[in-house]
Image 1 (cartoon, rainbow, N blue to C red):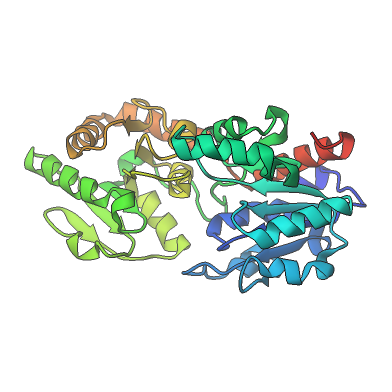
Image 2 (image 1 turned 45 degrees about the horizontal axis):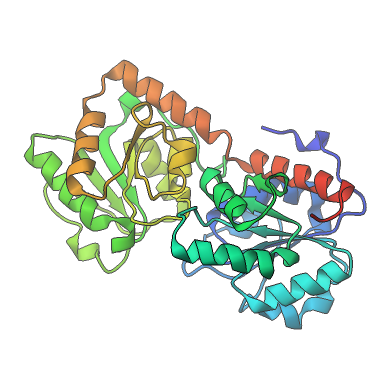
Length: 359
């Protein structure tokens, strides 16, 4: 982990960081918070299900906005800030604030988790970004490979894109016991909705059990499909806060996330940091960064229960040596997505933005 005492804090830097729906991975800012203290302004809107103890873990007060666009009416409160990092470009109030702040000499970094798809919407978006949005931002902060590819496609220069936006907070998501000492269990964590591929997961697990599979499936989450989360070998637990989720990740052998669309999928990183194997669909953004198919899990490419069931069977057949190697790979890959990674990206982009004029 990076030693923050060894990092230089620019005496004239006055950062502001905004997270929409402040998530548990907002704890990735912890090392930056510790370094800057009261010199940092941390803004957020509340998540639909707030993370308990967030501000205590951060050791810093979050100023809450009722609506992201409220930033424009409160702009004079933050006029002294000279570095802005904020979530996305969906809110007109933030774009107005960006223009106003850049006129005052501030640098603006947009944080984006969307993954590259290359569809018509993104093709049109590339034109819109180059003609209008690009002028608002000096750089982009992204979670991983797919979002980097998207920002390059949209027109952000490669040297203005930094990874480290998302990850797993290392004080909560820890390695846990050796994989062979864990329950023979698959774990799903997320909203119980079709977008997360819950229907495919349930059918695939049914096929796995019917073919003689003995591992169980534990489901953590809530949503309209919760009443369907039952059957042979299924343990339904419902929604759980981060610390309970981390414990379940340390107890299970393999996380499964078969989403039809997932910009990144922070839960994949959290599971990797907990020492779990990983099975994901190709539509999960974090697959590119954290899953080495056939090594620490599988990425399945066609959204079918048959393909997922095959991946479940393969992982369940791995012997002790292969399971242990897979666990070590997950743990190693997760080390690139900690609060130290966020801090490193932060300092790198600060150094670049202070020495070069906007692209």
